[in-house]
Length: 558
Image 1: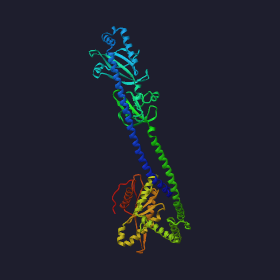
Image 2 (image 1 turned 135 degrees about the vertical axis):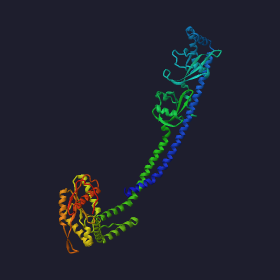
Image 3 (image 1 turned 90 degrees about the horizontal axis):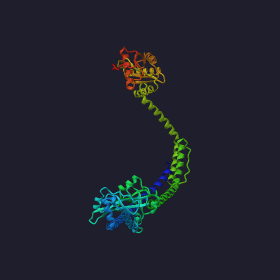
Image 4 (image 1 turned 180 degrees about the horizontal axis):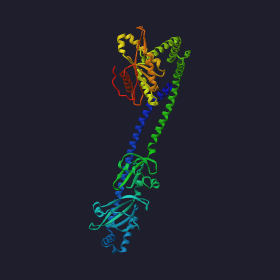
């Protein structure tokens, strides 16, 4: 990223981070407040609908009780139930017809009642105002429940025949001596409560749904909902979430497949689920408009800041680019560079110093080149000294270790063997003690020179230590290595010592090995070649010994 991009990015971030941070915090607080207000309003709406439904159910229970009381005083009903309890087969058709006419006459006076059905204590239908009454299954312990509870409210449900939600109330019919003769089952049309679920003035905005146990919509404050959807409102997962967390805020798809927010409450009598919901867009439309407006303003701010930053960065970057271009020419060796300075700020000062620097560089170019050549020569000398022995000019032991490791790696890759020779000057200690160290060093140097003359350019020779040398013959078989060893031994048979002004007889013991797959490390290879040298010395010295592939490693004896 160049300086211009960094300036633009920094300017945008410096403007964007505080603005976005404050905006996001503000919107989060606003969203939380909206959620809390919406939850509070939905709870109030659901509670209002719950209270109204409870009051309506109580009113219908009172109506059913009044009907039961009035019917209980009817001589026709008492005789009918009494005969029915004795023997239904003896019940006269005339009495049953009279009872049905009586129920029909009562039904005509009740606007919200759909059916009136009289059953005996066993649940058998005695008479009804309709030909095929709505099937109501009473519990097995109904007479006992009726004697304790007085009335039984049957769970509301949607009835296809009447195309409405119905609620049935079972009220016991008692004899004069308070003996239960049967029950009056009153089926009410729940559409009468639809207008009471929501008050236009008192209730908060939103809609109310009543669901049965199976999760089907049976009633809604808005009649359009029932006209478009008579199936289940939610899937089982969403219904479970609403029922498990009553009064908790949720977002889901409404009955008309629109996005809504809502919550649920459970009512025990009657057994229904009350859901209060509001359209998601109605709740969040203003908040989303503000959010979009904020995003637009931020975008405009970014463009304005970017334009200002671009102009400012151009005033800074353009002179810097000229300096960079001139510097690149200097790096390539072109010192004939001169920048035009038209600014009086810090960049102008930098341009002036740059011109002064190029002048100084041109003046000192010769000195720099001379110093560079001298430095290169010294570096080459230091590099040579770091890998060579000062007395012999051969490679030193550290360099030898690197050479052997490299040859082992090559051998592992291409499987081309190399040979290793370890050379020891016979009785060198005696020669050094008798003739002096100066003569001994001269002999060592002469031997090293003979070794260098006897090997190829691709081979390596190193002073291993004291009077020992190691030669690495690359891609060489044992037979060729033996020939090289014999040639070296023959050439150093006589060495002229200038400090003593006489020729000395020198013999060498040489051990030879060839690289093998078992040579897994530098130590293993040196151990094998050392063992081969030991065998040459043990066999009488002044000879070449070629070791077997994996000789037994033994201690060297000087």
